[in-house]
Image (cartoon, rainbow, N blue to C red; front, side):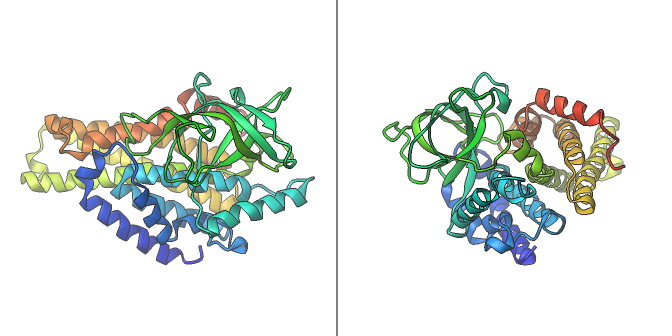
Amino acid sequence: MRNGQNLLANVEEIARGFAADRQVRQQRRALDPADVVALKEAGLHLAAVPEEHGGWWQGRQRSLRTHCQALRLLARGDASVALVATMHPSVLSFWRDPDPPARGQAAWEAQKRQVFGTVVDGAWWGTITSEPGTGGDISRSRAAAIPDGDGVHAFRISGEKHFGSGSGGTTHMVTTARRPGADAPEWFFIEVAGTPWDGTTGMALKAAWDGHGMAATNSHAFTFTDYPATRMAWPGTWREVMEGAGGSGTLANVAPFVGIVDAAMRHMREEFARRGLEPKDFRPFERIEWATAHRETWLLYQAYDGALAAVERKGRARHEAALAEASIAVLAESILTRLCRIAGGGAYSRHSPLGFWFEDVRALGFLRPPWALAADALFAFSTEAEPGL
């Protein structure tokens, strides 16, 4: 990645500052937009933009590992900020990573220039696609998209949306909606910078985020009424856009959860030192739980590195990325459970980071995507070929 080493050094410095203030940060219930500003000053927003469009990205095989490492480092300092930071590259990958379409290339290339140009000018992108009652399934989106008459891609959308992570820090958000009579939803994006949430402009806050984990992500729910939107210029289906990313968005989503495990394992080693414990002092139960957490952490790292290596080797690795995401979700929750057991009652204290991390890592399995959708995808992959062959 162009400027990759500088990016990692800048993000690591930010993460160290976040970690020094961890106890206060973990008890926050809202995102501080100043943190997003700091990440942009470090150049993280440009890391998702192709070099030919003014950014630092030089292709999945050269840049994905560096980008994921930046997100992993960030999560060691603040898990909520890291999760918000994953939304930006995940949605930009929809324009960045698919091969050129067979038709409509001129409109597609023009929109890519528009989208990436907003980032070069300082935009921060996010997503608000989920809808109540759909179980996270985009194909069941019920939001309506009505042509606005100001251009072929200009629409007005209306509907309920939730899990708008980064609200208040984002300038643009990707969403889905259905045109009249359409068999399937399509992708749209909206501009939200400076938009009031009182409904006067068509965007009303329905419910502030109140999650058990990832508490400071501002993953709010909104009601949209005739809100201006731009339809994605991709000439195919919404699913083709997601599949065209080749696993890069999935691995960006996974990286923060690896970083949380990094921080949690380091915390436990430091906790042993604070308690004056040596391995010979461990009770049998503590020995088993610690040794198992150590083994599961190794497996988690192998899943993560294996998926990144598959992308670097093949360019696209959707199967390996999906397997890594599901495996890391299971392993991270197990690891944090074991560390909390070793810590004992102290893990329930809001002065300990372990309980917060435990709830944070569960977000990977419950929300990104929900387990039922993840299982469907893994089954579909399993009928095609073995991963890695």
